[in-house]
Image (tube, rainbow, N blue to C red; front, top):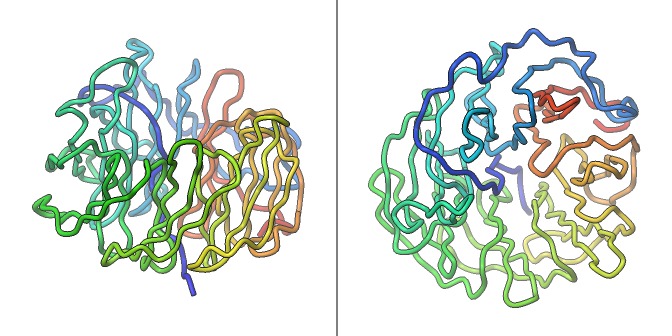
Length: 355
């Protein structure tokens, strides 16, 4: 039986060089908690808010750990071709550190570090080291600790238990977190789209594609042995919403412009629940005892679903947020929200129906 989920990073694209942000770039925390998406009261109330930036920084959660949330976004308004990484301290409720790094496709937290994969070009800027670099970053200061060069482009990275895994276009690598040495490698047989820990750190769930087909594949997180693979009936860009018993994924139907939320149970990914007629580009996120269904296009309604049955427990209005905008950590729920071209970081308290 699969156990709890470890927070992982969300796929994003950004490009830049290391730089600490100044006080004019990101704002302080003096924001009223009345900042909230409209018609969201059936789902949650806002308990705390932090203003991040104006003019649309398009932030996304990429990792969480050590009482911190790690967020990327275009916080630099002087150079629109650069994005930034910030650490929000959840105790002081302030932006505690900020930095810039080369192109990123995936970020993960674990083994006492942030891990930064650089495998794709962003904004037509070539990835450094031909995209083969994996950066080890101090999660407190956001300073680069080491740069590991792997045999191919580093597309996805995650930490499952005490194992650091990196997926390239063709291969899954287990990497020593101190030396960067490759410990184990396996051929994937497909192109990785997203990779996330599942169970109690005993497994990896990898979303991938081969031609027009997409799969979710379960790997043993220690050995890399393939446990199971399931063909997904439709296209999806993720994210995967893992639970203690399985994984939820939203698939798009191009013809009807709708999405279906699907639940696969256990390590063998047995098809269990399918709920259709969601807005195209719906994203699913693991919550505290629920699954959140969010329209990444910002127009469709938002729902909280029972994790195992998919039963709708509450429905609210559109959140108006993009992919990578909702996360849970330390028993709390967090949301990135845009209003009047200003981005906010919110801590929300789920309603009784959604907890």
